[in-house]
Length: 282
Image 1 (tube, helix red, strand yellow):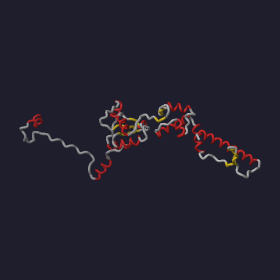
Image 2 (cartoon, rainbow, N blue to C red; image 1 turned 45 degrees about the vertical axis):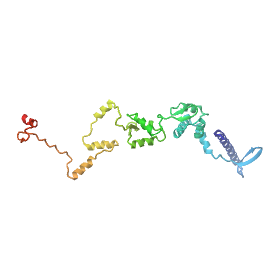
Image 3 (tube, rainbow, N blue to C red; image 1 turned 135 degrees about the vertical axis):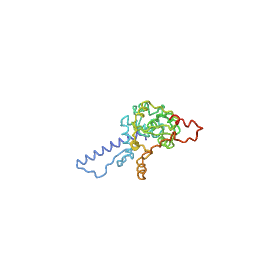
């Protein structure tokens, strides 16, 4: 039996039950209490049958279908797009109806809007999901990232194929790409880890970088790195504490003055006159 037929049958059952309940209520008001269970009579092939009222086994499913088809157009479109995204298969309108209960043949607005949706591809018969980048595997993903030395937003790659996020992490672990967070949008950006890549940097960014004055104390620099989620390569506070315990001064030793040749210096290499220019000039 088709879905529409099941829905019609479900509605008739609800009407019959409502009528029976109304009859029971009327009998109770009149002081008459039924001694036997209420039954519904039906005539099939000319014979009268008596059976207890039974609801359909899939009553909840039919209620769900009814709710979905009464939902706004946008909600039904999202349901179809989610189906296409999760399965990455192509569906006819009839197959979509069977899979997620959206009857696109009966709802022209859903059909037309899905056909024009940028995330949906319609070839005249079937609907399928359309990602921004048509990638199939990790190799194609790496090739795409390498085409964008200035970075490509991960949010634009998330729907490329089912395992794209796992492949991004694998490429990062292999040292082939970088995944860095954008401080403004908090979204990750993928960069190719290629020393030969020619990365263009705006002059404004260069000027901003050069105008930043770093703290003079390494401890302050390490604190700033930690505030921005980066682990310092050094631990100045720990090194200084160890130096104080061992009695070693943390201050750098002054450089010794380089000895110069004076008139008092005993000359032993008189045959090399270029060594004594300072002496001659003094």
